[in-house]
Image 1: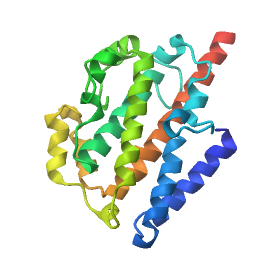
Image 2 (image 1 turned 135 degrees about the vertical axis):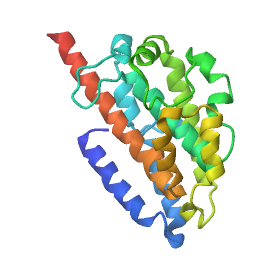
Image 3 (image 1 turned 90 degrees about the horizontal axis):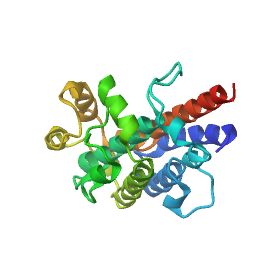
Length: 232
């Protein structure tokens, strides 16, 4: 995805926002979501030849740059691996707890062990010590595999939603699950309060799409800046 294609992504996201709650455009909204969502994951997720934002990020991305923490960017100091892990965890818990009310992908196939980490939350309000530990120890290959698994599950959940479901509010019992499963730190009650006010459409428009887009763009800026530093 070049800058022109990213601009088109933004335009289509505005379109999705406009139609997602219209019952007459329910299936159009699902198809547009699937198209938008695919561009935020590896092209393998959709068996497509289209170059996605993730494909751009991981191309020629060496491990030192993956793990670098803190980074010198003005809009973030967090490592690329932290950003990828963060958006994967946010998507996993939002789609599988708050929307699907099913098991998180994180616990479905020993992903914590595979990724070589013990953090099951999403990193909001994470301290510097834990940030350093995650950035230095997480298995990069398994992280990408976990995120792909999360993305595939998201597509299954949204593809099977019925007309009218997008307008439904988040079930408050599912907010409790966030804490029961350590998907959110106690210090991040503010985030639980934020999600509790959302509709299903709101979750689709942010954690499943817009949130990913914003963080992946940050990752690409980190990669570009650190590569420039290496060349000096």
